[in-house]
Image (tube, rainbow, N blue to C red):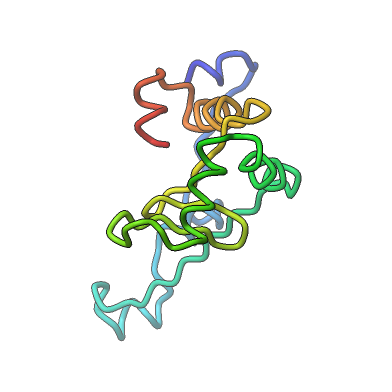
Length: 132
């Protein structure tokens, strides 16, 4: 709300019949609503995340500059690590369990933290870190 107060605006009510977008989003299509119980409706969501290729390149090249990552990748490649640790090197990226390892390189960790902070709605540091 605080963000909106920087703009001059007025709020007007538009009834459902005149506001077809809101009306469409709030109702099931008639043929579905009458023929299939709501709990049985199939839902398919599509979510795609793309990143700047230079950002991924920085992560990959950062592995060579971060000595801890460099050694860990060599251990993974030579299969010297216990498989229970669930550390993998896939597509040029290092993962621990299902989390991407970000090297200490070009401030990548700080960039990701700031991006997360800004996109979550400017929560505090603890909550931002928790979401990472």
